[in-house]
Length: 329
Image (spheres, rainbow, N blue to C red):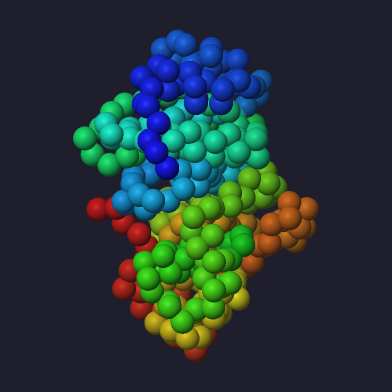
């Protein structure tokens, strides 16, 4: 595809990003230095931010619309983990000086697609040139009724631990993209890659957990690592049973062929499922609410006195974790 002539910064904003702000009166048409966003009565704002960098979080030849959708969704997943409704977002886009404007066009199209799906709109942001790789940052803003937000710090000994969806798909999908797992059937490989490239924020489940769960986080760094964050914030420990983990058929196929990948299910990131705890008395209500939200949830363990996360294998012995999850540094 031939490169199209590049627009200047303000033309770029007017052409591709101002249309994304059409549903946000406080965006002021992206013509001012900042935006306006009053909270709804009786609600507080929930804010989160994430960055994707070319060559680190996505491949340089990944479709730009897919990159945009993943970036928006990982932020929305953070909002879901706090039981918040997505409202708006800010975008900071740093482009190499020799960028291809068709990439920006595709990126904006991906944002438009998921804005409609999740009911969120662009408020503003920044567009800059960089001598380094392309990077994009979104700051997402949600709302939750005052006092109804979920935090990591509410877990209590005796709580049951649940996780939504299935675990390990995204990490194994990244292995497929890296050229590993070559014996995996094509359909299974595509399923795993899809889970890595396009997360599924559990927004409806987040709403359902209001007033029912005690603590929550999304699984971004890895199941054990993110459960460890809940434990550290709450001053408790956790015990999970490997045999209870919800695994997709594709993940089960990988583990059957390469048993050493079982640890990746525990430590691999990017699943963006919701991990939460609740009192036993609330479990039945949560299970029913999850059905109404059309998101499967599975009990995988319990909160205990102490600290850290213990994983019990199917043989009844503790699994020694060499790595608990992804670390940036």
